[in-house]
Image (cartoon, rainbow, N blue to C red):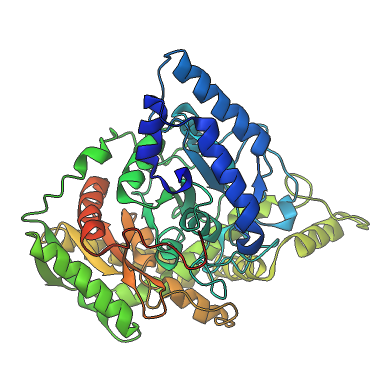
Length: 486
């Protein structure tokens, strides 16, 4: 079945003439038509545009023209990635129906590599959430158990990949929004080093934290997609002018001498026993293949959550100020004056969680409060980064659980703080600007996926992928697929 083929195999078969890009696409479109009514992963499917892209790939192959590294691979995009002539809403009513006149940089790079953009997938509104329950349009379900969330904010991306509704997807990660849903849905998700991937054409949440990254079914596919989207972009002032490694060449299986840090702070109370055991097995699998496990301390870990929920809302309140119904965003009808237009447009357009974070951020940035909150949070952020800098003197990667538990049921996290705690193990990676990856490492007794997280030195995604590939081969899910998804 072509819809379960890894991206690497899809490209190889298309190049060799064993499979057409059009045939691969039609298998996914049929599957979306069959299953997405139940899962709710897609907000928009561009069947006509995707068919045209696939037909062009097939034409090039028949004409013996050069084909890109992702030729014919059907890919879904999180709905915060600006996509030409395809509705880009950030899962918010305030952007309802907006069809951009241009592609963001990562979308351009996917197209240049030959990828087929199949559609846009659901997420928490403006990427603010950990369950995709905050979307203004629908709730995406976890394909392993449809009574449970797929994680967030890239829940549509992770669910679509896990259910075989696309070969791979791109998400964004501000505090764990690629890695946490990857863990919940049993797929691979990597957040690159901050600045490694361009943010030009990404609907902004928190500009000093946001990064785009792939969600895939294999580590090999993650390496393939990451290489395609990385690289300097002069239109993004935070983009790093660094060479892009051949990430796939890092997957050698050789990890002898790799120093793996095990931070005690990430294995304290609050972790489900099954998660702890699975992560420990993943660590043991590295040790069995020649890696060295080293106990380390990251003493400011407990401060990551409060620091993040000052920094991120503050930056969000600034970024979302542009959505006023005049410059950007849908304008409310019947306003009496300018102030009433602002209030109505934002009141009708933003959902509860977005409003909550705007208010938190605006408060933290107020005159007289800036030093006490935002400045202090940035100082704590520096301490968290310093912890990692010290750790890199002794270890090459840091291994932790991705999440404290497996996927939870819809409505289980009704209090905002309870929901925020779902990302407690992923936040520090963003605050420090590090690369991080989540790879499946087992199932619970209820057949729910468990993810293990690896964090690495800045710009050292290759080492993360190499270690993750070993874990995948040793304790990954293999051919296991979600219940009820065939």
